[in-house]
Length: 451
Image (cartoon, rainbow, N blue to C red; front, side, top):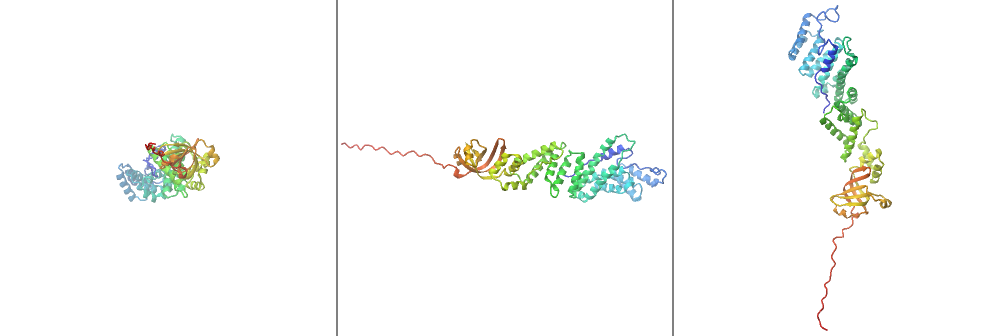
């Protein structure tokens, strides 16, 4: 998924033109000489000039039309009819799929200012925005500043376009027709700001798009990119908008899966690379549930950072882990993030059950005092002992210490799960070996001497 939104055709331009009535798809019809808006004024161009422009306008083959228009401009470089000629250039080059030329002639028309009607300037700016989105990346980079300026002018010009009194369309419907152009101009400004690495401006423009289309996949995704690229980055905001793109109803399954995988990696990296993959999955699922049910990120939502986790690990002991996890709340979440996947040395406990097999599983109660040892009757840990078959000799109700990796825990009923454990050698009873059969001395036979 890239940062360029694909726009096809010029349908919103045409739609708005149909509402306004007296316009072609791009540009107003050229009044004949002597029929301009000021009927008493002298014509600004000759009839010959007018007929030449009309001949170009009537040409249906884009390449031929461009040649005709080039000839017109060469012959009449300062013609008042350029206000109608430049839109014809834009339309022809749009059909020829030449975005650079579309932009060039759109800019020429816009530079004429009030000589062109507001709706025509809007059309040119709209066509320019569409063309900018199709430029190669290098050209987009080079033209980013002008693209942002043109998009901003497009929004302003669109506001100047008024509904004619003689058009049978409600004000509400006319306003709705302006939504799509508004989205395009804001999206263009946002993309150009991203290209220019002006991320705060990109955020502002992307949010303007979401105000009209909150479920848009690309806008949410790119807004996440903008927040992540800021100095300093704003990961919580970035994660939220990536999650919004995953949960977008407009996203295909393939798109959602791709962004979901990317987001999971970002969360893991944010937390220093969780050893326990299941933790990242849990955090990701919680975030997606929130994003799918809420328009805005809850103010209380956050994820601990790698620095938070590292700080929690500095003073951590297995006893503090037990206490924090059993207490619950936010502290338990941070503690579990910091503890899961770590190896803890010489964890004390009382053996409640010895499960035979490979691996050997010991059910153990965590104890830290004689009183706790005496009172313990049920386990709160299972410990997989790997590569130490002699550990099977530990006895029920005996005291042991083991070194192992904490891999999971159940909050209710409270239970810890350990893997890759080794029991302290001193806590394993010595192997007495096989019992020897008693040595029986042979019975001495009588000597057979007579008395």
